[in-house]
Amino acid sequence: MLALPSLAIAAALATTSYRVAMPEPSSHFFRVEVRFEQVRAPLLFAFPAFSPGGWQIDEVAANVLDVAAVDGRKTPLAAVKIDKQTWEIAKPADGTVVVSYRVFATRREHPTPPA
Image (cartoon, rainbow, N blue to C red; front, side):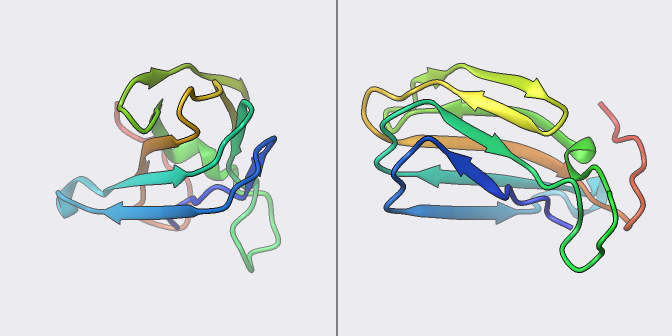
């Protein structure tokens, strides 16, 4: 499960795009980048509490590491974790937010990811 976010609030989003890579398959980490355009307010970026079709609480965000955000000019934006699955991303000056993170994914269960 790639743990793609299910929620983007407080922004009029004309375009959202994802880039997913697994540069080192033996590490079991995916690298994900999500780009939001036309963001006019702080952005709430959240992961689902369940896997699609699973209909059980899975705590998807438990396997997410290194959440970071930049604007379109690659200027860092504050990304503050406000609960176990949600980050508040500061409003960008240029209207673009790029959120990046790693996801540990080896099996359906949720092992503790390595640091």
